[in-house]
Length: 322
Image (cartoon, rainbow, N blue to C red):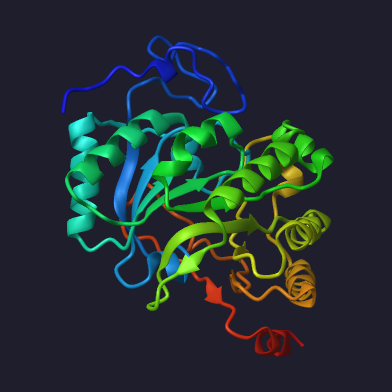
């Protein structure tokens, strides 16, 4: 497959930053030029159980990011990558085929926005070869509607971060106060087009939307607001993943107020609130104290693991917390 010149990179508007640079000549806000840059390709056991399932999610970690959170848990590749590998289209398709041959439950594109033209072309090549496997867009929630329109028909599952619902918090942490508005509009669009997460008879995710939220120290009110919004906008059957793996390990200078772990009291307050709202589909990561064992380390190409517990009974889960 001959490499393709993508017009989308010439005046890049793939993310809400709309920086309009010619990425064939210079880096965008995302930190990437037009060359397809990938840090890691591996079977990932650390996603939600319905995503990793038995053999793991066939995960492709792209370098760069258009959001650039100062606390990013993937900081090693999203903003400080020293292990960029440039892939031709042929090599990219071969990487996906290799994951499929290894038994991947799906193909999982992590932080994909700024390389979406390559991804779409790769998906077309996979389908032309006859492969049928769930395709996942693992994204930050900071997506423009225009961008989502270009990818939504090629993707089966959206793992969609909902980081901040409070504009003041978003402005303080991201210096991007419009994150909540952008995120909520994007979620509305993909939910309308893909629907709630659907699992097959084996518990494997095959289509739809799973909303993720990372608990952060000192911002319980933001988490409560997010789940209130989800209930009002989508009802108690929406699939969610409440994650408690925040670590200040890669925290940027100037954000010292985030230099702590989520406390047990903060964790319990959010979990109790989620249970009280009556959600019936989701995952709650168990309380993690001072342990970075489950933080991805991109300096070692191993299978990442994680502890995410499925909510099979809210009553049982709540009794465990009392």
